[in-house]
Structures are given as structure tokens and as C-alpha cells.
Image (cartoon, rainbow, N blue to C red; front, side, top):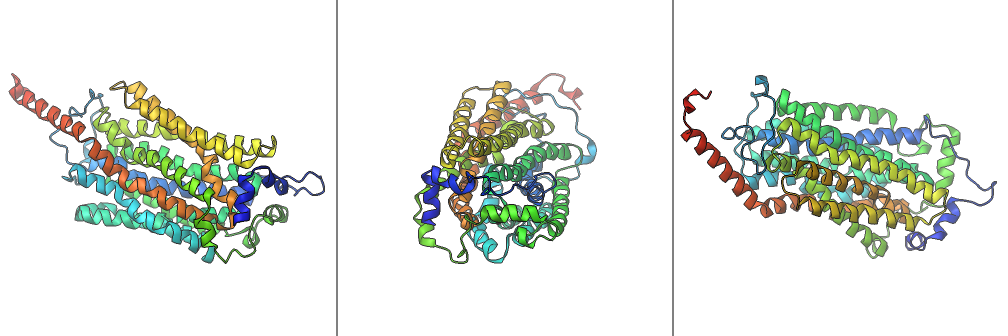
Length: 473
């Protein structure tokens, strides 16, 4: 492993086997259209769409699951509330709950307590037993537990927390398993393209599930959020089981040209002793430590927004459940677009302009970290300017998408044979922000909630003491 990551950190030496100078030595490229590797990218994109849909739908549904009958039209939000249409009467059949703010924080963060447990084991099992079924059954289990979420909520907050932990355990293997699979499927000079398409599903899952969850809550009720997305997860599992294979050599329908293109391009990348895991070299690797720091830092912002952005839109900016999902999704639309574009640019710089891989990864990581930080800090100083708030949050998440071609792919650059394990290690540390971020954020905003409660009580007193209040319906 030391030799593998050393070549990358020194830059130019990594490019020699990837771009042979002589025409005869160049690996013949297989077409991308209708290819098995891009088919895998699309199906894995669908898979990560499911993964993130099942992860974030609770963030929107939580707004509707709480007993807020004492409030009227979001009058208790910190900023002036926005007008919203009357809700259909047929969506009032679902139960609501009297969970305090602390309980809400634990429910939203509980997913990550399960998620962190299967990161490293997921990378190990994917390499040992195969990535296809590990990811497939992991997401299938999460979909099943999602279908059980309304029942768990009725039984009590502790049951809901337990179900969310189990969902996290199932989803925890998804990224390590997929990195292991891409180590066998992604030609080195197509990594940025293939992986950004694959992980675009994570952004699309957020982009689509947030507004759709808001509409489902508005018209049908919060329980249907979990039923609908759970069924979508079951459909994905059927497609994954029939059309995906662990490697090009086990795929029965791949063209011979594509199989040779992939295997020949990877023959100098993959270790012939992949069954042996050099734990000491892994744990003492300085490049891996750098990825851990980058992954942890990026996820603190990402997971805090992911779990609390709908609450911010509701409690601070005063947007209704219907408006909430649409506006909460905007930052992730930009993130998805920037991720795909950055993947194309990164591979162009490496393949055509011959920039060293290490230089490209570092530049894209810097843009994807510093840019979001600047706009996120700025968003804290704009008060109730709704346009600037949404704009800054969108720009922050959009620039974060650039890091998809930075540290996010480095695991495959420094040691492709152990990419699943490396991702498991970095994602273990990067999951900590998801566990503690919502709890810390809610603890830091106690004064905001006290102000909101004061405004609610003041509004209620005014309504009771106002003249002619007997004509109110």
C-alpha cells in the first residue's frame, strides 16, 4: 500500500501507466453508450437515490409529526410567516406526537448511531464476500424498516429511535460496498465521471425527496412519506439483483471489448494479494489521515444541513410544510449539478491536460471546502432576508459538490484494492457529525426556541383578548 499511495502523492508518476505514450501500448477504449460500466453507474445512482431518500425523508416528515395545534399558520416562527394554502382535510388522520426539542434531536441523529457501526465491517465484507449482495441486502433492510417507521412512531420515541438505528446499520455498508465494486469496474481515467454519476443519486435523493415529502405530507399525511419511499427501495432491489454483477469477469452480458478495456486498465492498479489487508500501513498512512480530516469537516456541514434545514425553514424563516420541502431542496440541486460538472472537468484535466492526479484532487477539495464555509457563515448574518438566506445556503451546498471530485475519490487513487476499507475508515469518522451535529445545533439554538415560544404565547394572548374574537371560527 505504501508504494501505491506514494505514487499518487508525488503526482506525475501515477500518470505513466494510465496514459501510455505509444499508440500500440494504449488500452483500447470501449464506448460509453449502453456499456455495462455506465449501466452500473446509473443503477448505483438509483441506489444512492433510495439511500438518501430513506435517510432524509424524516427531516421533512418530522415537521408534520409534531403536535403543534396551539400554533396557527406558523405564527410562532422567528421571521414573519409566509402565507400558505389551506391543507386538505383528508390528511389529518395520522397521529402527532408531543416530542420535545431534545427528543427530536435524538430521533434525527439516531440513524447515524447505526450507520457508524457498519462502515469498516462493510468495507471488509465487501472485499471478502462481494459488494453486490452486501449493498443490495443493506438497502433492502433499510427499505423494510422505513415501511415500519409509522408503526414504530406510534409505539413511542424509543421504538422510532431503534428503527432509525437499524436503518443506519443497513445503509452503513452502501458506500464501502460501492467503492469496492468501483475498484473492479472503473477505469482509472474514468473514475471521476463514473463516481460522480453514481453518487449523483445521493444528491438527487435529497433534491427529490425533500419537496416530494413536503407535498406528500401536505396532501396525504406524513405516514405515506415512508410507505412510498419504502416501496421505491423494494423496486430498486429487484433491478439491482438482476442486472448488477461484482466484476466485469462475472458479468454475462458485457461485451468482450469493454471487459478487456476495464481489466487491462486496472491490471497495474489492483493488488494481487488483495485478500491480505495491510492494516498497519493503512492506519499509519498520512494521505488517509488527510482524507479523514477532509471527510469529517465536510460532513459536519453536510449532515447538519441535511437534518435541520427543513426545521430552519419552518421555525426561523416561517415557510409552510408545502413550501419547506421545495426550498430545502434547492441547495442540493446546485450540489448535484456542480458534482457532475466537476467530475467531467477533473477527468479532462487529468486525461487531456495531463495534470497530476494529486493536484486535481487537492484543488477540487479546496474549492469544495472553503466555498461552502464562506457562504454558510454569511448566511448567519442576513437575518430574515429570505432571498439571501436561500441563495447563500444554495451556493454553499453547490460549491460543496465540487469536492465530489476531490477527497471523495482519493480512496480509489491511493489504494484501489482496499478502497472499500479506506472508505469505511474515513466514513466512520465522518459519521460522527451526523450523530452529534443535530444535538449540538439544537443546544446552540435554545434562545431561538425560547423566542419562538414567547412569540407563540404572545400571539395566543392577543387572540384571546382581541375584541370581537367571538366571530373567529
